[in-house]
Image (cartoon, protein in one colour):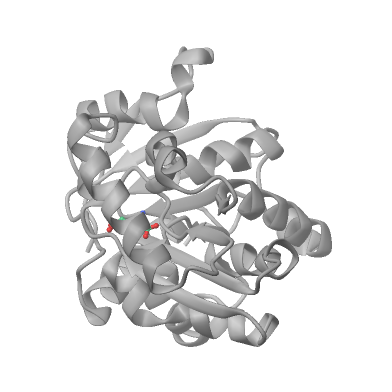
Length: 283
Ligand code: DGL
């Protein structure tokens, strides 16, 4: 494994993590980033604990092998199902000095300050909802908050298949918002607990009652990472500062490139250095 300084690794089952990477780069453009999307095996949302753990572990090892000392699981499903075991078991074996961080904790940290009614909703993949990770984490930080989870199994496929803006998406977006709010009408804050969901934000806003606060995680994850690096100069020293971003995918590079433009809103930026993707195989 490479011991010199390297980029920050960012991992997702597919494209969703790009919404997190975009916010992290906005906050800290100075670092180098290496994004890995497991597009060949996405979605992870309905997969078992063992499978999500194994796929995530492979991805983390791959990114470590590419010189990353710090890897962000920019995927709620992987953060819910694999993060703890990787932190407590795998890191000890691979290299206790490397770090893997998730996206759930930084999101949960802000909920207590946002909800007034102390009734919070989570919209996420089936795997994240069934893991109850959000409930457990919120319970630790704000035990007075009542949490209701709603699995939205169609939302990731809508995004992955470019249907997030189509009339067909309206049905599924409205259905799950209505389900959630009918189960607990006192909910005043809803966490979008899946990194794909920001692409559905236009429709989510349309069907969410105006008084309900929609919590998007990208900005909070970025602020929390910045804070983490401020508190851990030994890790910060091990990140290279060339301002670059490289993309790896386990599926076709060209398909990744064209999709990534949408997720990263990179079309607005200088396209020259951006969005060349490279295919890799995980094992
Ligand atoms: N982006 C992932 C998340 O945040 C979910 C996508 C999937 O189901 O693979 O949970």
